[in-house]
Image (cartoon, rainbow, N blue to C red; front, side, top):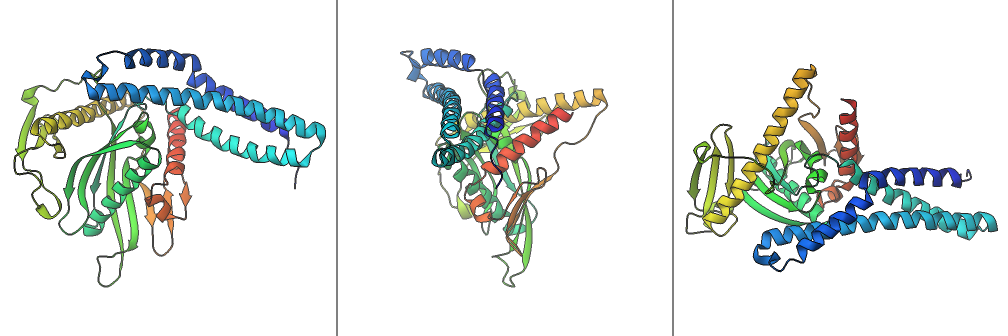
Length: 370
């Protein structure tokens, strides 16, 4: 077994940490914490519970970000001292402890580096995710429900709050579509790489002949609109329809017309909300999601115009971005990054971090290549 070049490994760690520190900017984080702390101490903060929750969430996240950064710097310093002690004393036990910590620090530093790659305009936003079943009939509807559980379990693992906004159930099983929020800073930066077409290959549990079935589901991820965003939606540009909320199989959940469907006439975008208790709440939630989609559409149009002017019009994302194969072998593979695992059950249970990290690195590389 080759001896570890400790000085070289430590130099690499310190260089990586230095780069992360420059991007994260501890001084700016401290200023942000002070600003948010002042807002959180305001006596009328909880007059608007939703705004108050946003302030306290951002404060907690920023404090956590600074703490992680400072602790990582201390861990690297402590590791350097441990290695120095082990080398000076030629102590195998101390060096063995250093080897273990070195591996742990490298892994945690890689996770910290992912945060520095999320520097997009909306990456720090909360996310709105919509899943729609595609080709594949009842298997596709069931697949959409599997993806919903996957994302909710991922959020649960990280302690992120989620809220289902609208659900359209399929007739036999599964979901036609579902829209939900992930209420955590950088939720959009993390989940934006999930947008695209997902494919499932398995023996269909709905086929009495036990045949293999391929089904598809589309995932859309948009950043949640904020009060600082200016997306004007004139009343003349929308049509609002109200209807009764419903559950699986069409069972009535509400005896009043509380569900709301808003159609944006210029673009044809349709947003439905039925999970709030009142029509007013559903309309407000639907408008928020509509504005978020219009914000993304505006940005996409601006990006397309820039590429057109530059004479470089090419798609950076393919329609089919990930395959989940349950038969004849077990594998989940991202077709953009080539990242793959052989444990679909773990992925469907929310073990997504490896795919997200690979996707974020891939996206940053693609952006640099443009």
